[in-house]
Length: 591
Image 1 (cartoon, rainbow, N blue to C red):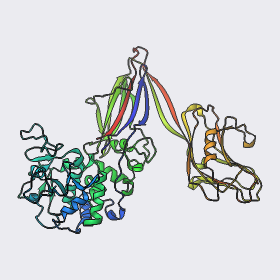
Image 2 (image 1 turned 180 degrees about the horizontal axis):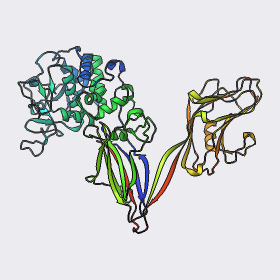
Image 3 (image 1 turned 90 degrees about the horizontal axis):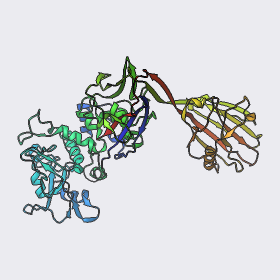
Image 4 (image 1 turned 120 degrees about the vertical axis):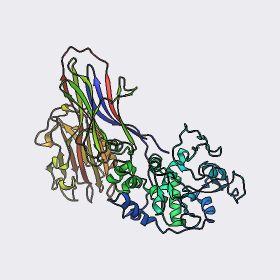
C-alpha cells in the first residue's frame, strides 16, 4: 500500500508581526524494495536514456523461455491463494477461484485464462519468448480479459460517452473508455512495470504517448499510455507479492528479472528529461541505499540537517549535503516583508508537491495564493519563489528566526587532562575518537576530557551527543562519568562538578562485563535545563587496582553539542494595529 507522506518547514508570524522559522517532520511510513544483489545491475551506474535502456536490455535479454502451455501451472504457483492452495487469485478482480476453473476454450466467463498485459495484437507473437513471458502474463476472468481486449492502459475519462464503471462486474475496481482500460489502484503499479519491462526486453515493441503518436492499432507494435504508466509506476510502489513473484520468476522459471520491480527509479531515468522522482533517487543514492529506507526513505535525513528526503526532493537538493540555507527564508526589502522558498522547477514527475500554507491556530491550514508570487530560475532543476506577506510601513514587525547550530563538533575540540596514573586519553582527531585504559599493575587512574567553554544562556534546546563502547571487566567501578560546571578551574580535580545523572546511569547500564568489547552505543543528554555563560562539560575516567587483569577500557567518539539559536529584529513603527497570530509553513507531500 502507498502511504501519504508530509514534511514541513514552518514559519510563524506572532503579535503585530513576529516571524519564527523552524523545521519539523510528520510521522511517515516508507516501503522497501527487494534487496537483489547489485551485481545483477552492475553496469547501470551513471547511465540514462537509451544507453541505460540498452544496458538493462542486455541484462534481461535471452531469458529461459517456457512454453505457453506451461504458463497455466506457473500462474497457479505464482498467484496461489495463501489461504487455499487449491485456488488461484485473479489479477484484475483479486477474486479467489478454484484451479479447476481453467478455461479450455468454451467455458463460461467466470473461468480464468491467460491475459497478455501487452496485447498480442500490438506486436506480441503467438509463439516465442514474448508470448509466454511471465512478467507480462497474468490470470484473469475470461470475461474480464474479453472486456479489456486490446485497449491500452490509461486513466478513464468519465465524461466520455462510452465510459464504463465498472468495466466489468467481475472486476469492480476497473473502468474503461472506448479505447482505454484503467485497472484498480492495487494493480496499476504492476501493470505499469510489466509494460515498461516489455518495451525494454523486446526491441520491436514501442511504448508511446498518444497523442502525439498515433494510437495503438493492430498494424503496429505500439502500446500506450507512456506518461500514465510512468506516473502509476511512481505512485504505486511494488507490493510484497510483486516482489516475491519477481524473485520466483527469476529463480524458478525464466532466469531474468523485471528491473522496474527491483528499482522503479530506472523508468524515470530512461524516459523522463528534467527533474523526476527516479532521477533524483538514482543520482543521490546507490542501488543498495535505495533498498534501505533508513537512508533513502522519504522520512530519512542522511545528512542530518533537519530536512527530510521528501523535502529535499521537493526542493530538488542533495540529501547527502547539508543545506547551507533553509528551504524558506524571510527578508525585508524596502517596506515589504518577503517570504522566499525553493522548489523544483517542474514538479510533474517528482512525486512530491510543495505549497505555502497559512494558519491562525496551527490547526486549520489554508493554501496561500501564489498567483502574485515571482519566480527566479536558480539552475536547471530549481527555482525560487518569492511572495510579499505584508508592508512594514504601518506596523511593527518582529522577526524571530531560529537556527540549528553546532557548538561542539569533534573530538579535537576537547582537551585531555591527566590527573593521576601512567596513562592518559589518546585523542585520535583524524578518526574523531579518544580511548583510554589502565594495564594491570599500573597506578590508579584519573583522567579527564574537557569540552570547550559554552555560553548556554545564548541558546535553547541544547543536546550533548556522543558514541561510546567499552571492554574488559572492572567490577567495582563503571570507570566513566559525565559532569558539568559553571566554575571551571585549570585543575578539573579541584573543580566543583555537577553529575549528569541520566547519562551516567546509561553508561553504567551498558558497560562491558567481560573481555569482549561491547557494541557502539549513542548517548544523548539534554542540557536545556542548565544555565550559565561559562559551562564546561567533563568526561572523567577512573580506575583503581582491584582486579588481576585489564581494567575497563573506554572509547568515546563523535562528541557534539547541538542547540537552537534565536535572533530577534524589530522593523517598522507603532502606527499599525495589533493583528492575530499568523503561522506559515512550506509543506511537502508525496502523492
